[in-house]
Length: 620
Image 1 (cartoon, rainbow, N blue to C red):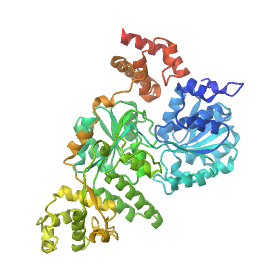
Image 2 (image 1 turned 90 degrees about the vertical axis):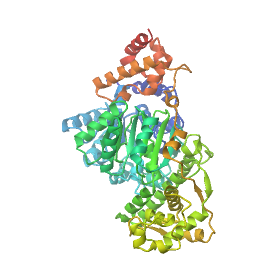
Image 3 (image 1 turned 180 degrees about the horizontal axis):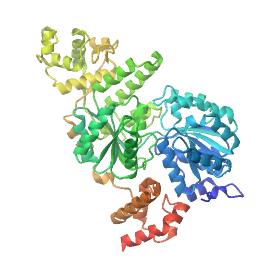
Image 4 (image 1 turned 45 degrees about the horizontal axis):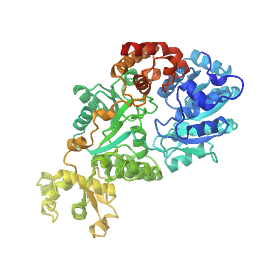
């Protein structure tokens, strides 16, 4: 395959012209051009850019514009495979060097690298750090090093990978080669550790907005999570591709089975499954339309599927970083998508217990508890979820109403909760701070159960003092007081709640407590914020002209067949946005087709005549 135009002899090619000719894109987004020019001129940097923001181009273009081969360090075999497939479709000489290759295949990749026949080479971190690979790179002409998923280097981050620590060797062994570290999620502590460990002290940091305005954030009270999930998918995302995250392997399989019985095409994915089945399920999710994958967090990192319409959580993640990264897998193509989570008190107790029982250092546990508390505060906030989410990453100035989260679309009612809080905290104290939420609620409501009478709690002054609220409302009070930090789970007594130091101010009436009212029901709240199907329709790319539905269907069918023949995901052939653009613009000539975003020179050469024929036939 011939190398792209960027390798031509003569004056240095312009980044915008290469962006257009190779990738078919008419313009840079945000700070992309500034980053590309900085790295192309030999500078190193840190790039923080949200999923779907165009991080890949920040190292792919400089690799084409500089002499030599760009080395991309990635822990994700799936991402390597998909990105290389996409680059090859665009006419870029790209390859991988990882454990999936045979000895002969790896040897051929090494030969091509030394021969100067590669523009980009994707390498796993553990492979790169071997003496053999470092020696190989020492003999090659290297354009740059790109360290993707750079947050993995941080021991304080949500996805620490020990093999990333050794990547400090890149700066030591190749001091004159520019390095670009990229991530979609990193708080201030994580950013500092990335800079220190990867030798980027003094290098500029390009921080894009973390906002994903196309994603609608919604968090509901967990009641019957499987039923709630089925209603959410059925009402909002029937036939759409999505990811459902669960904490345990057993829950993954139970949820996948329940969705399948409900007529939803769902597949399980977790580390306990046979490797072959896991790979087949992942491939189906990537290559087929409308598949829902139910998974532990082992799934998704590096999955480059642009048309995931929703991400749902049936269990609370560990931190806002994890939540942001996982929800960010929805809507990479910029179209309206959903981040939905069902959450309850048991989630907080479970996550807190996992932290307390871990073998980590006390310092790490304190950091983990702080991260969990921040996520719980996001779940319980009565204000704009997007503003709180962005504020966590140090990004302010987004106002108080984003117009695209459940709290902004259907603001919760607040009430003075001082008396209810005092009753609950008094009940916790009077019962000895060794019982869970359900027992406390039984006592408050005045419900005579075997346990209540066994411990004599029906004789306490707090028995029945909370009869004005029902069980659901008391659950909401418990959850919110835990979120506020006035109650916490006791790590030594499973499920038990105990008072914190701040509870004293509440009991004395010195601390104001405002509580959000429990919604009348999850279905009614979901219906109030439900997107109309028209809101989720593909956006037109033909100057306001609506996309032709028949042409869209014909293009998708053609794309599926081409992808099957070539053994690549459908979106590697053409992104949905490109199909929508063709269906809206209805080009009649190769020149008009070339003007559609996503149609570069190679794709025009490969598919131009077929696509124009499809347009003519569909509109005949």
